[in-house]
Structure formats: structure tokens, C-alpha cells
Amino acid sequence: MQVTKTVDDTRAIIKAWKKEGLTIGLVPTMGFLHEGHASLIRKCREQNERVVVSDFVNPTQFGPNEDLAAYPRDFERDSQLCESLGADLIFHPEPEDMYEDPCAYVSIEKLSNNLCGLTRPIHFRGVCTVVSKLFHIVAPDRAYFGEKDAQQLAIIRKMVKDLNFDIEIVGCPIVREEDGLAKSSRNTYLSAEERKAALCLSRSVARGKEVIRKGMKTEVLLAEMRAVIEAEPLAKIDYVSVVDALTMENVDVIDCDVLVAMAVYIGKTRLIDNFSWQLPQER
Ligand code: AMP
Image 1 (cartoon, rainbow, N blue to C red):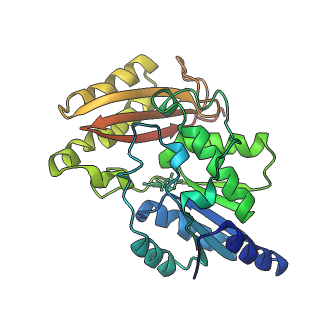
Image 2 (cartoon, helix red, strand yellow):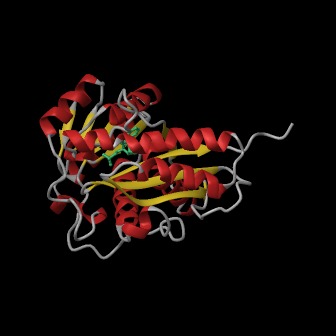
């Protein structure tokens, strides 16, 4: 497995692979890798001749009062995991290698305005900008994203469509801890007491699935899901919403495929979770 820090070194390797006609898969990450990331890397390994993992805590997707400085980092551990999963290259740049007084940004309108975009107004612009840069640097055939960040996945799909990136976007299911908590690098921020409290997110998701299956109204669904979280004293809801799976706009009546998504503060840590719901097919 090779490790590169600069765009030029990465491009040189990619160029050689392209010359050989090899297919390339990309897994963009912010590092501090866990089983969620590993599932993306495994899928990428199955489907491509060369596997590239990017490991970069992207400053442009953090707001001024967010956790950029505190975000956990452990490149040694990340590279061992990538090696064990059969990755061919880790691209691990420094912020200065990626951004030199930037003036160009990529933002995807409408879809970025709801849900996480309400509390994190510049977040998706940062994500789309760094992912576009990675797409240009690595020129992958396929790129892998987790359904854990479902709004991000919808935005990336729209970006690829609108900007004609010739890249297949592969969505991968949420990987959870045994007790249900969605795996996240940010789970390391939680104290033992908060870790227990954080289970209210996956419990709320489970309750939501039960309610939606019964065909209840959106207000009932949201009220039931909120009640599960509100019963937990350490939790504070940022949002619990039902949105159109493609547009990310709120829906009052579930007459399309939807994403049911939430962000919840457990103490100071903001966690997200979600589930998707497809309309039953007409016979
Ligand atoms: P991050 O390092 O948090 O930016 O995540 C990098 C990629 O891994 C994103 O596409 C995430 O959606 C995905 N990911 C993170 N956690 C999980 C998880 N628990 N299950 C599946 N994918 C995940």
C-alpha cells in the first residue's frame, strides 16, 4: 500500500494505473476509521482493481464554532486498517496541500438548505468542494459513501448528476454498534453516561420504523420519534424530520420515498441517525 501527501504524487500514481486500464474506486473519509468506513473500503475492494482511501479532516466543512481542532486523528491506526483491508493507496494531504487561498467552491442548492444545513450552513459547500477536488485528483470509476450521512449522499448524487461527473456513486448501509448506536468517529467524545444516553437515537429510529409501517400520519410519526428522545434527559433535539428522499424537502403526507432523519445533541456532541422508507410498490 502506498501513502501520498501531495496532489502531484497522487496524480502520478493514478496516471500509471489509468495507463494500464485499471478500474479505480475512491473512499473519501476524515480518518479515525471504524467499522463503518471499513464496510465502504471492503465494498470498494470487491468492485475495483485499485482502491484509494482519502484520509483528510477537511477544514472547509467545519463552521467557526465546530470541532475541527478536537476532531480525533490517528493516521498510524488508519493506515494499518487500510492495509489490512487491501487498499492500494491512502491519500493523506495537509490542509495547505488542498487549499491555497481558495476562491472556488461547489455548492448544491436547495438540498443543502434543510436538515443539517439549517444548523451547519457552510457544511455541505465544504463537503461538495472537497469531494469535487478528490474526484478531479483521483478520477475514480466509483466512489463510496455511507447512508449514515444520508443528506450528504443525496447531495453528492445530485452534484454528480448536475455537474456530469462520470463516476458511479455507491451508497453503503449504516454500520451500528451491537447495541444499535450508529458508528461514528464522534462517538469518542461521549462520556460513559452520554454513551448510554446516545442510544435514544437508534431507539427513536426503531420506533419510527414501527410507526411508519403502520401507515400513521407524519405528525404521529414525528411525535412518537421525538418522545423517545425527549425521555432522555441528556439529549436535546436539533431536528427530527421527514423529507423527500431526492429533494430533501419536508413532506406532510408520505406519498413518495422518504428519508426520516435526526440530529440530536448528547451533551455537547451532535449525533445523527436516519432511516429510508420506500413507498410500497403498487401491484
Ligand atoms: P467521515 O470520516 O465521518 O467523513 O465518513 C466517511 C464516510 O464513511 C462517509 O461516506 C460516511 O457516511 C461513512 N460512514 C461513517 N460512519 C458510517 C457508518 N456507521 N456506517 C456506514 N458508513 C459510515
